[in-house]
Image (tube, rainbow, N blue to C red; front, side, top):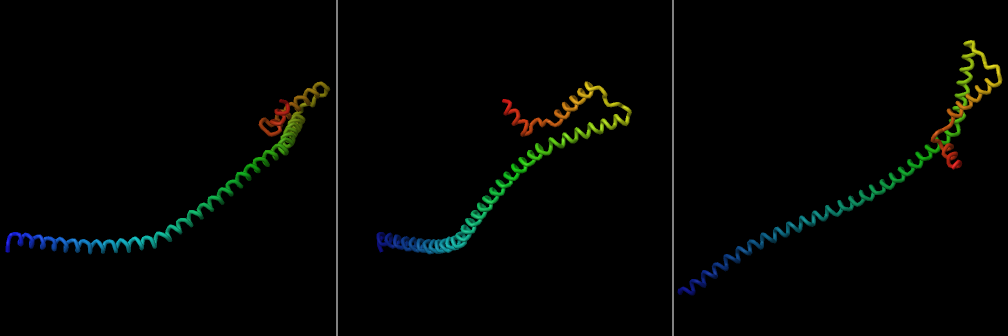
Length: 158
């Protein structure tokens, strides 16, 4: 055997070992690819229903939020109506109640004076002055400062 033939034989053995190692690597790579394919298909099978369920949950939450928006709007309307009703009741009943309270206060005071021995003014000028003072007190006590009626009066007066 010559040196050239020995070199050729070494190159052939080297190529045979190299091809064998590459074949082993390719076999292992094919196994890894098969396992990756199985894993991807399993994840896909589980992920698709999960995504469908997530979409349904998001739609349900959106519907609930729409309902909450409607309820909030209704509560705001009810609060505005209650506020308007309380203002109306205060304007309608509040004035006469204050007048009745002022009148009853005046009557009690007069009865207490009468029982204490004080006399009711006999002269017309004294009675007129007392009546004028009482009317001024009643007006001051019954005049709402920030009510709807006072706002309307101020708007009309200019």
